[in-house]
Amino acid sequence: EVLKAMAILYRTYAFKEMVENQVILTVNDFFVYKPIAYYKLAFAPDYDKIVATLGEAIDQTNAMFVTYQEKYILPFIHVSNFGQTLEDNRYPYLSSVSSLWDSSSPFYIDTIKFSYDFLSKIFHFTITKDTTFKITEVSPYGKVLKLSIGGHDIDGMKFMNLLHLKSQFISIILNMHGVSIITKGWGDALGLSLYGACHLAENGCNYANILSYYFPK
Image (cartoon, rainbow, N blue to C red):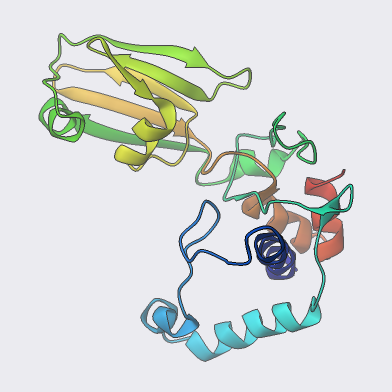
């Protein structure tokens, strides 16, 4: 049922891109396209079973898509959040809904340690135990939007991507020999939570119930 919900969302994106741009980029903000054969090694030894399951999810939702005010929506999906999804003023069809299942996710809290030498190489300026770290701008829900490291301003998303963090919901602990970065959730907490959707499916919800829950508008 979760795969069906995902199929509908990604199909919606395909329709939206073809209507607006007449092309779907293989690398975009929502997915990186690979032919299914690319995953033979990753899916081994269950490749054939997984491909058949994906095909069934696609076929059983054939031609289905999601709209808001008669326009295709964007397929916001994340792995897990910190107990609720977020709204975003740029996208009126996104709502903040409770997703308490995510609080039990193994991705709820993640901690990664970095040495000062490693950080210096990543950011291309010297970072030591005496360097100041400041979170300078935070969204109303706690997403780190901007940081300052030793007087250098860094965009929150760039910081996340450079260090391969799971989210922008960040806490920073300074130690003698390096920095510990704690993140909450995996993704931007917008739209469909895969972890929460799996819990809904396990409790008898189908793909329509799942989409209605995470996209109530």
